[in-house]
Structures are given as C-alpha cells and as structure tokens.
Amino acid sequence: MKPKVLALVHTSAMLVPMFQQLCRDKLPGVDVFNIADESLIKDVIRHGGLTPAVAQRVVAHIFLAERAGADYIMVTCSSIGRAVETAAGLCSVPVLRVDQPMADRAVQLGTRIGVIATLSTTLEPTADLIRRRAALADKHVQLESHLCDSAFDALVRGDIARHDAMVSDALDQLGRRVDVIVLAQASMARVAENLAPGIVSVPILASPPLAIEYLANAL
Image (cartoon, rainbow, N blue to C red; front, top):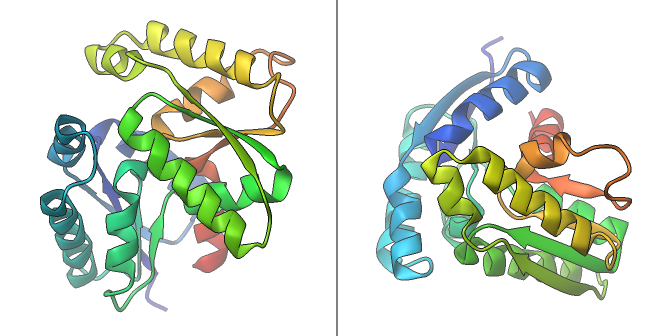
C-alpha cells in the first residue's frame, strides 16, 4: 500500500526539526514533507495581523502542497489560522490548523482558560479559535490572555534563555488563576516540557504534540 503523505506548512524554519522528530515518533510509515515561508509571519508582524495579501499566499502554499501529492495538510502557525480555514473549504484533501486539537482539549479540560503568546498577532487568533470551538461544544468559557512582550524578539536574536525565562514566569503567574493554560505558539512547547515539576499545577497544552496525536488518528 502506498504510504500516506503529510505536508507541513511553516512560517518559521526553526519549527521544522521539532515537527520532524514528532512525526518520526508518532507517524511511522507516513511520508512527510515541509514547506517553510518565513516572509508570511514577517508580513503579519509588520502589518499587525493577517492581511488579504498574506492570506492569499497561505492559501497558495496549501494548494501547492495538495498538488505535490499531500493526502493531509497541516499549517503550524496560529497567526494565519483564518487563512488556513479558508483553504480547508477549498481543498480536496483535509487541512488542519495546528492549534485546533489544542483548543478542543482546552475546552474539555476547563472553563477558565489561560492563553499565553509571545506575539500579539497570535494571541487574538488563538483566543478567537478557543471561543468558537467552545461554542461548537455548547460550553461557556472565560479566557485570560497574557502577552510575553519582547520574548519573540529575544528568540529571533538567539537569546533562548531570555525567551524561556519570560514564558516560564508567565506560566507560573497564570497557572494560579486558571484551570488550563494554552500556549498559542508552537515555539513555546519546549519551555513547558522543561519546566521543573510542581512549578505549575494546571495542565499546559502545546499545539505540536496534540496536533500530531490528532493526525496519528486521522491518518
């Protein structure tokens, strides 16, 4: 039998190794290829949000992945989620936002949901997705958002220690007030994994492992 083909569309090449490892561990026998276009997130940041021009390029990348033979496509950036949903309605193969399984899990786990992001352009799209997934589940939730301002800049500069310290501090603070914490960006997943036991007592959800778990069932 021909193996299933999964396409991953990224706005940061830094995420490729992490997703490659997750796919090796959780998706044996699935053929995976990556498309990375960092200009997408740079333009989103420059304009303060998703623009029609960026959305068109996101959709074009997804169509390119479909033409390249993908049986399933996942986009690993939450900031462009609305464009991903648009493409999903036009493609002949399934298209997934990386943060949808995480949003669904958060809604299942609690009513007070904390959302942490290092980019303002990611914070609202993630919160909006959680609200809409909660509405689909007929559940009322309260969101508390926290922006780790300048943490993303530190990561881009290569100051990983500063980025991780800022995110860790936010996790500690928010964990005292909510039932579950959502990490709005895949780049923060490593921080949650490396937290010392007992620092945060509530579940911390990161999109990469939950999305790959979802794909393992779907594929």
